[in-house]
Structures are given as C-alpha cells and as structure tokens.
Amino acid sequence: MAYTEAREKLRGSICPVITPFTEDGAIDEKTFKELVNWQIESGSHGISVTGTSGEPSSMTIAERKRVMELAKETIDGRVIFTPGTGSTNHDETMELTKYAEELGADAAMVIVPYYNRPNQEALYQHFKTVADSVEIPIIIYNIPGRSAVNMEVSTMKRLVQDCPNIIGAKESNKDFEHVNRVLLECGRDFLLFSGIELLCYPMLAIGGAGFISATANVEPVKVAALYNAWAAGDVAKAQDLHFELMPLNDVLFKDTNPTVAKAALGMMGKITPKLRMPLGLPSEELQEEVRQVLIENGNLPQEALAK
Image: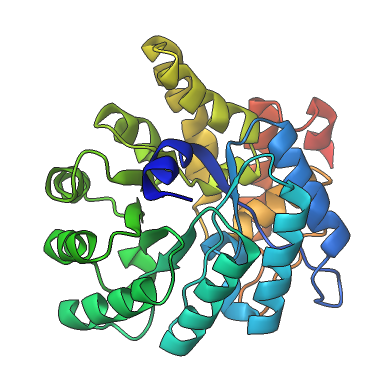
C-alpha cells in the first residue's frame, strides 16, 4: 500500500479487540472470530489485536502470531487491520512487525517499549531500526502510563522525517498540549489516533484521524457513530455521543484495562471473562457498578440488575 493511500484509508474507530480465553487459559478462537465479526457488523472501521487490550505481554510470540492470523482471516478485507507488534524485546518487535507485513496488514502498531524505560535516543534507534526493516506503514503507540516513558514530540518528529513509513501515532497521553504539538511538528497529514477515551472527540476537533478505544470492545456502535457524526459534519451529534459515552468510559478504567472490559463482556454473554495471570477480574463491588452502567447504557436488559 502506498503511504498516501494508507493515510486516506486508516481512519475511524479501530477497535483494539480483547483476546478471549477459555477456562483453562487457551485462546478461545471461536469466540475471538465472533468478536471480530460483531465489531465489523456494529460499524467499527478497523480491527487491532494484541495491543494493550489484548494482553500481549501474557502471550507467547506464537500465540500473538496466531491471533493476528485469525483476525486477518476473519476480517477478510472488510475493514482495515492494524495489529499491535511491539514488545519490550527489540528482536521480538522486529519479528512480529515483519510477520504483520507478511500477513498483509494495513499497518503495524508498535508500542513504546514498556518496563525498559529507554531514553529518547534509544527510542529513536529502536523505532528507526524496526521501520527500516519493513515497508508496512507504522503507527507509533505512545502510552506513558504503561511504558513509564513518554516519546517526546521532538523524537517523534525526527522519526517521521527519517522514516517514510512512520505515518501516525496512537497517543494514549492525557497531556492534550503534547498531542496538539504532535500534529504541529509531525505535519497535519500525520495520522493521530486517540487512545484516551475522553480525548476521542477532542482529538477529532484538532484534525485527528480517529481513535483506538478500548470502550469499543463493549460499545462498538456508539464509538463508531461518534466518528461518523463528526465526519458527516454533525458536530452536535458527535458532542452528544461524547458525553453519552463518558459514564461507560469512566467505569471501564476503574481497574487495569482490559480487566473491566472483560468483566463487562462476560455480563453481556460475549465471552468467558477469563484473564491470564498476573491480571484478574475487578472486585465484586466494581463489577456491580459496571453492571449498572451497562444497564443504563442499554447493553444489558433491566432484569440483569437482579443477577
């Protein structure tokens, strides 16, 4: 795909689909395919897998590749596909990104390495080496709350200037000043996606390309509708959806993602709410709060409150 074409195509609500597991901890392939189909049928504009919501750090490289394969097969060209290929390990990141390219993914989303806390020069070298090894478009995934290091705007600008296939970033950064400066320094055609739920709408207002929101796992219709309303010029409807989604956005992040989303999907009958250690389900009190929000949002029938 030419990078100009990628810039036009990679837009909208890209759902970072969770990885469902069976009770014994294996990847639930049947349920995973059902989730991907449900997302597409619900209007999501794209699918991402093995990002934060997909618990990639709890999976082997072979498992991550298998999930990518399943997603590509199930999507079957209906929407864009942007798997997460980053890791704390440089060689693993190289291997997974090359695999995404071999599969024919539309872009690879590469996270700022977590736990290692590299300095800015090391970040530059890591991303440049990965980008230089492939031709697939790269979306930088900047998530300082999980990686413990923020990719500075100057580093991102340098990468964009030196690597033509680095065409965008998922910014899970609550510093909206930083986000504005990304577009200023990296170019207005740089694809900026929000990874912070309450910034999905504001990001569109400054020229963002869309969002990769964990909330879409639970409420794909409204999350996609927010982007559609904005793209159609219906600002009032986009604003209404922004505020309508806030209670759900808030409750889904009262514990570590994707623990609450998996609990919610379990209540909705979509998955067996199983997480791999060291993650676990949220407290019973929080789960009851989630149930109430799901009922109020229309995701569960009223009688579910008594369960």
